[in-house]
Amino acid sequence: MIRFSWLQFRAQAAVVAGALALLAVAAAVLIHRDDGSVRTWLGLLVIVTPGLIGAFWGAPLVASEFEDGTFRLAWTQSVTRRRWMAVKLVVVGLASMAAAGLLSLVVTWWASPLDRGNQFATFDQRDIAPIGYAAFAFTLGVLAGALIRRTRPAMFVTLAVFITVRLAELTWLRPRLLQPVLLNLALNPGSTGYGQAGTLSVLFGSPTLMPNPPDLPNTWITSTRIVNAHGEGLTTRVLDGACPSINRGRGGGGLGHTKAPQAVVNALQDCVAKIGTTYHEALAYQPASHYWPLQWYELAIFLGAALVLAAACLSRIRRA
Amino acid sequence: MRCQPSTPCRHRPWRTTGFVNDSSKTLLAASGLGKRYRRRWALSDCTLEIPAGRVVGLVGPNGAGKTTLLHLAAGLIAPTTGMVEVLGERPGDGPAQLGRVGFVAQDTPLYSGLSVAGHLRMAAYLNPGWDGEQARRRIEQLGIDPRQRAGRLSGGQRAQLALTLAIAKRPELLILDEPVASLDPLARREFLRSVAGTAARSSVVLSSHLVADLELICDYLVVLVASRVRLAGDIAALLTSQRQRTGRPVTLDDLVVASMSQTGLR
Image (cartoon, rainbow over the protein chains, first blue to last red):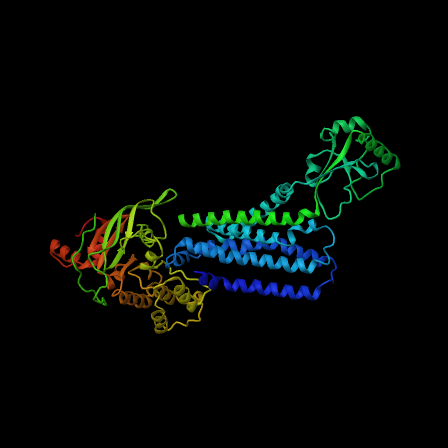
């Protein structure tokens, strides 16, 4: 069954292996000649590859057997269907992980002289995390194909679910994986602004004081809040009470940046100083020493999810 | 109507003698067998028993449940109700049981991107009892280029390749689901001749909605209408008893049509 899986899969494997080899050679030639965009594009490639693996290797694995009717050929050979599924999952799954792992390895190696900045900025494009994403996306695709039984819809569902899971993990789970380092700072009137940040807060939030993040090299700042001694956040009511003038006048004009009049700047600085007597900035961040533990956690979480999905594939295929 | 155990059969045209199988054994036994897809019953309460060592023709109108019955017998689907046994075992129950049954599905599915030789290699990898020499010889005799991709074969060649894959695993039972439905008359005749050639080594169950196809190679008949067995038995014995009853010669076609329409013979 292993030899048969390889017989069916080798053409696709050869294409990807060839592309990887080409990329490695190109990277070796291009090394250090970075205009910035090559690094960005390679990073993007590492990010989208697991999703493509899920859609193009995972989803058709079972779905195409149903679509072409060949399941009637495959499952009437002297191999039980569970074994058929298990071997396919292992062979193509390991190939998926190898492809994503090698791509990440090439990109990590190529970009290492350029990656002198914040490691966390390229967290999901480097090192071992992409291996976990590929395993997860692949098994997700196989399960979608086994449930939907049609290749095209299974591919779309795979991509949609994969993107959703990745975003949820990135914004919600990953910051909570390791206890962050907490840091309390006094509010600095010189570097604290007023406004809104983030796409969602523009819609739902109200403007508040916005301290500029301090310069903490190679860290991932997961939250920045203004709190008092009891840990309570700064409310609009308190802010308006302390600085009645702050919400008046027009907001910073819609087009481009216009320099605020000196009077407004002074008023804001006075306000921040006044608030700063009872409130301070509370920072949570992941230090550089957390980078590798987080990479391993990330790999373990997605591999674990992949194992759960693989088990679901096996139980699904037995009842088909 | 239940199927009766039949008397030993008479020779049919092309039929070879000398069974490996003991005809007292049961090839296929079903009781109260049913399969439901969501709300629709594709087969319900089907009870039948077919003795081994036969070339069995399964006829019936579209929607009678022929394909469902054969898929159940090949272990491709599991029954919703009742039970089915093939060669004394539950279908699809382990690799050994799968090896005892060869299956040629309707429209003879193949991997269109895989070559003919690739298909033979696949079957060699997946079947411990694979007879590679026989398979190669068959493909050669049929004049099929082993390097050809399966997607580019003619309908007749596809059917022959699918049959080769099924018989070279040396099964005790060969199941064919409407194998000739899409073939032209010449390819159809060639194919049925090939099937008849395998009957010396294995029992055969063949479904069709054309009686003429079955008449060429079958010696046992099962008529299935709306999941129920309307008529089953040795073809020669069925014809003889009908002739004795009506007092005039009857053809197999008459017999099948009469049993399907439930009006009896005129």
